[in-house]
Length: 224
Picture 1 (cartoon, rainbow, N blue to C red):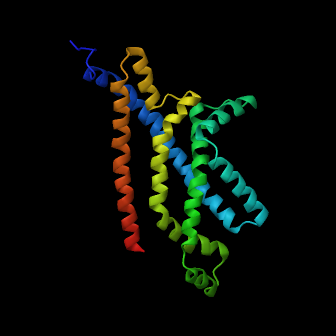
Picture 2: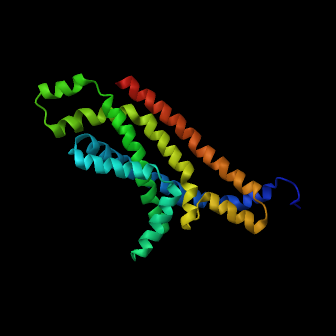
Picture 3: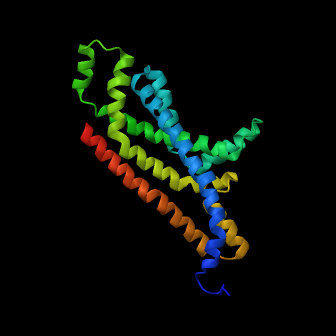
């Protein structure tokens, strides 16, 4: 027989583990992967607009980007949910969460891309001019590949940060892993096991990922 007065009870760990793993796979991982893809693509587009678009357009994009970066992610999630409802648009909360996370982190990845583009030596630009390469060819074949290679580690760190911030989706009624732990704790009056398990699962997933990003960065550096 288990003793619920003891600070730690393994029975509660095994009881909550299946639901937490399910939330981890269907919410935490899905949001991280989908939002990372959106952020990576949209961030590159923002960086290119700020670099190449006419000054008025670049200024507007920069203002919007800074506004998004300077407002809390939680506020953006709530605004996305209730703003869409006010417009009569009823989307699944997890879809809203993916879109908001993708947009929010795109603004940070755009700065990473910008730094990567700025790090390209002037000689690379001069060489493309000497070879009469088109502007599109210059970007797609020379500049962007080098910029992405130089920014892999920073982009990966933002993906890990996004992964760790996915519990914020609970404010728009998405039952992520941490919310599942809280619900279990409230039902059984045992929070320590469930919350600790959530932390362990985050660590088990994020630490190997950070090591993999580091190895990828070194591999790309050796190829450059």
